[in-house]
Image 1 (cartoon, rainbow, N blue to C red):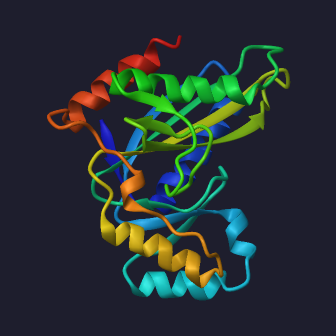
Image 2 (image 1 turned 45 degrees about the vertical axis):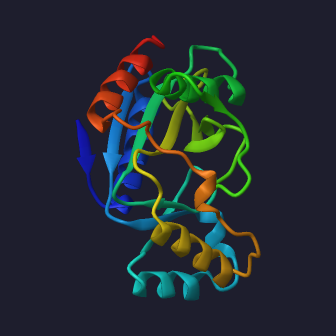
Length: 220
C-alpha cells in the first residue's frame, strides 16, 4: 500500500514512527508514501539568509517548501516520485554504524532494481551523496537518516532510514524549481536532469514496490 499525503504530514508521521520504535524497540515500520509536488529541504537550510524569501517565491510558483529532520539536501516531491521510510531499532548493545545502516537501506533497493544497480556520488544530482542508489551510473534514489537513542532501552537506538526514488523520469519543472531555490539562497551549484535515472521500461510501480517490500523483509 502506498499512502498519498502532504509532505509536511508525511515528515511528521516519520517522526511519530521513530518515537514509536524508540519507546518499543520490538516494533518495526516499512512505509511507502507519495505527496503532491513540493520541495523538501533539511532544517539546516532554514537558517540561511534569504530562506524565507526563497520559500515564499517557490510557493508562489507552486512549489511549497517543507522542512525535514533527516539532513541531506533539497529534494522534489510529486508525480512519479516514491518514498520509503524504514524505521527499526538496533540490537541491544550494538553501536550505531552509519555505513551498516545505510547498507540496510540501500541493499534492498539495489536488489529490487537488479542489473545495473549500485551506489555512490553522482555529480549534478539533487541531494548528492555517498549513499545514492544508482542505476546504470545515474542516480535513482537519494537517502537520508535520523538516529535517536532509545527511550525504553538506552542500549538500543531507533533508526529512521528514508529514500526518495524516481519511479518516472524527473521532470524539468522539478529541476528548475530546485535550481531557482538554490539560486535564491545564493548557492551557485546547479542540478542536471541528465544525472538521474528512473525505473527501467516495463517495470511498473506496483511490481517494484512488491519486490522492494520483500527485499526489506529479507533483512530480518
